[in-house]
Image (cartoon, rainbow, N blue to C red; front, side):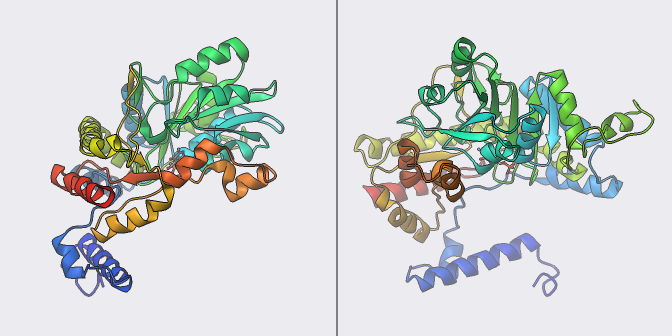
Length: 420
Ligand SMILES: Cc1ncc(COP(=O)(O)O)c(C=O)c1O
């Protein structure tokens, strides 16, 4: 098709295909939405990268330079920008947040039989990064008012074998790592905190960046995240020794990085590692994104406020629940906006109603403990109840920087009419 219409942008053609496909699927379901109708009422996606010419130019510059593999000037620049923005002593760019978590687990020397506490409301790689090294995963339940892990539920799962507690800043809302650290210092001071800050680029707790609050933090730059380079991540730490280990792990277990800097004559195999260094194209796109990070953050936070204001009426009538307000000293990044439906059974009906109006929505997270693999690990034990409630009732709404006020109003009106 691209070949048949060489003058048209591929993006435009893809968008047309998407509209036609969505239209035909909807016609099958008997919904009133022809391709023409959808063109008049643009589709509202759940998320969309905020890209402009700078990102295009950055990627093109790398291709033109022919230095496309990882380890060039853009890697250094992106890492410097990330150190500056987060305040971390070390920022190591990785191919993904999942790989950053894997490297963190290896660098922390996780072994057979170590216990790692992971929120049930987590992402598969929050757990599998440790599981693959032989750790026993122990799941902690959510809070009642928020899917994030409950501090008390974490503390109850501590044993003498606990080596790490993983925290997830769900939806970019900071988990109170300081409170957890205080409790651990009293009960289990050797236990380290690993932040799965995949969703939390630019979130802050008492002025400090999420990802820098524990021993090590990992952030994602996947295409769905606030700041993106397609696939990518960063590992943050203040620990020099740990950073050195990750530098080796990231490049096949070798000291290639030192060699590239002219600090050794040759490089050799030093430890178990893998290919976790992102290409320069990714690093360059990331630099362009970081240049506009303030703009992205401000717009997303404004959209969160817009939803809170627009849905307050429905919340006051218990038609849905809003996320709790931000705790003092806590600043989210507006990565996800979720609501909780008291009657989970109505969620698919509501999603159909939104889809018929061209609005994408999503459920989120099948809790790890009740997932098929989680159930194998737990030998079929009953899932933790609070995470289960969010699994059945949580609904995510569209949020991305170029979602206009008018389009957000359309989403809010649709919810008001469908739930009101
Ligand atoms: C909480 C959490 N952890 C880890 C990841 C994995 O990130 P990546 O896709 O960069 O590997 C995600 C991705 O959505 C996530 O939401």
